[in-house]
Length: 292
Ligand code: ADP
Ligand code: MG
Image 1 (cartoon, rainbow, N blue to C red):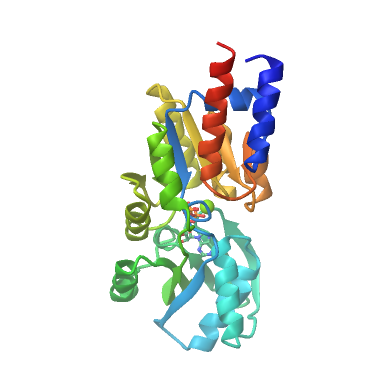
Image 2: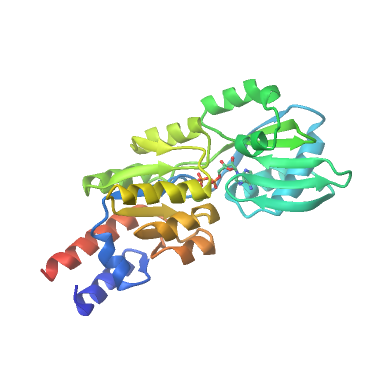
């Protein structure tokens, strides 16, 4: 496209709340064939709320105190939900040391007595050798309700399980339908569990999805689509989405997302809506059609 028509396209995108980093990004948007979308914070509002607390060992006050202290160190949307929940329950902070955040999985630390603490996904705990069998029936009940599960383990035993619910963005179903009508294949990738992923996919009209994905797996998934000849857009909000956003032919960051996601993407969706992606693609196509 000519510099002038591209500039006009960038301006039109801005009117729709889409900030375009470069003319090249706008031009590439017209060639997209597949759109990969993250779940948490992208299809959902990213305002999760703790709905259930199952204490598996010890007392609730201890579990809430540990959850409060561990999640204060994390900037994941789930962390805010657990901090709010623990504070509302009157939790008092616990003493911990060697805090470490495990991107896309949760957090790790130690009690002052040297007991290992893990808070996060089933995968985080399982990989550390924690047996989740004591939580199996509670987990099944929460998964059936499409809850996101957050496990807390101390000294290699699960001591609490939290169920978290994150409402769908009100326009997610609509926007996915518009993208599909524009000819895009829409695929959801998430670090969350299979049941929750399946429920969100069903509610948004997405037929293809992958769950339990680590950040580098999201990146590899996009690379494979590209090797198969797809031109791939990626929409995400989190630190865990940054490698995939950078790898995609066009990355779209949610404007309310983390700085690193925004820095890794060619476009930023200021209204946080997937309609912005459809607008950008439609504007890009019109811009290229004009100069032919
Ligand atoms: P998504 O890919 O849907 O945006 P993430 O990759 O950010 O999800 O997170 C994947 C999973 O890792 C979450 O569903 C949760 O189980 C776990 N997790 C990640 N960070 C945290 C945290 N700070 N506290 C609790 N759980 C976490
Ligand atoms: Mg996310």
